[in-house]
Image (cartoon, rainbow, N blue to C red; front, side):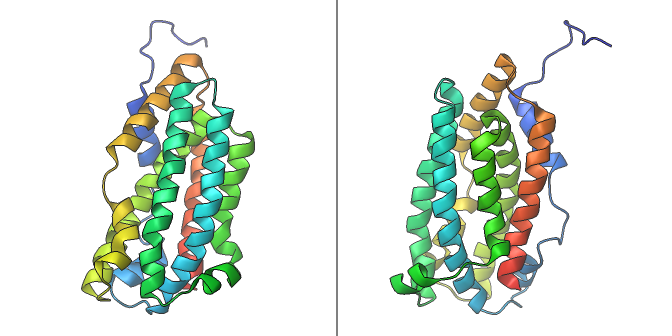
Length: 225
């Protein structure tokens, strides 16, 4: 059956809301965040988190920069990934407070051997950066950011209530826990451009998003294990 040309076209807001809803992880799937929320995780997991996240941020920033270059002919899409790359640079600065609170040195960061389960997420993000339609990656990432932000809100509160970490140590999680209107606005603009130009393929985006969410959980659970 041919599509009805008079049928209303999906909006970016609807596509993104659907991705966030459909790709939301199961409650309790993140074993480490549940333990941190209850104050039951050992304090050492925060050092491991900082060490692993230091690697993730560097990789993701390169992936976002590459996606921005690939979308050079589509300014709304390129702008979205440019903003994400800038955000990774800011996040790295915030992560320093956690590393300091955990007693980590530059030598510790440079010499750390990352866990495969923690680095599956940035590895897959790099794969998407190389070959996936950038608009579809924007949809998948938006769904993942919703889950990531929720985890960061829980962890930031638990670090204060159960672990007595100072503000500087919690700053990384607070950075991602807060709403990011600029990111949401640019995501909508990028996806709307993709819909208007026929580049967006929500079905493919959901496939990417499911794997990103799975690798996100693998990151946290590998830190905890």
